[in-house]
Length: 222
Image (cartoon, rainbow, N blue to C red; front, side, top):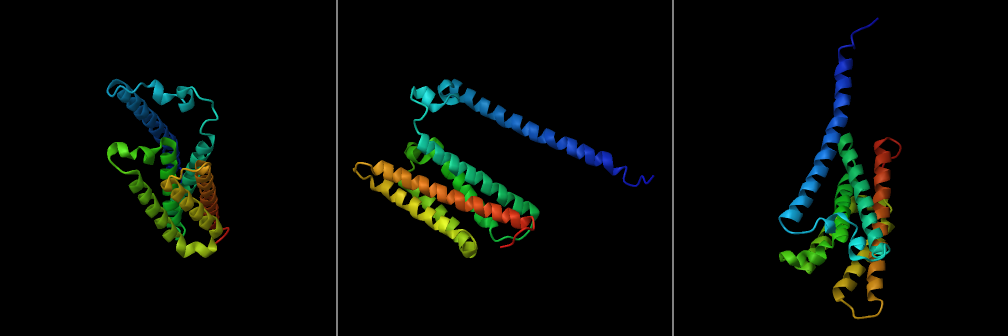
């Protein structure tokens, strides 16, 4: 019997066994950090933990459907961001050159930030720390322009109509928001345009991520 490989077996097995423990401890540490933050806010800053751990509508005593449309937009932002960043990370780990990688990274990062902004109303509350809301919106616009610049080299080989529609809808929604129109239905117009833009951008980035992952696996190429 050939025993030349036997010394490597326990080493490999030990490495595989140790890997889940690292992830396990990371999850535990992350949750412990959040619990510590909640206790700190409650004890030091007087923010009742009750208002942190419960659902916002339950705290406000409102029906569960309140904020449904906005919440679905946040879900789309975060799903698209997580999927796209995952694909960008896989491409980087694989080491294969792919012109879509920068677009995936920037697009995913933009979606994650926008999703967190929607979820926690960050740009609406930025004035509390001395940052004008319009300045935050301008930074987001510049970020989206950087995503568009990253898309330019591969534009024709992607579902560009999705991206163009996303830019049009998101841009128009932002203009309606900043115009602060005193018209009946203005909020509905703004929010529907925004949600449509999110949906188109999510479709563009997720389809791009799928194509890039397929190429990395050797099934397709750009």
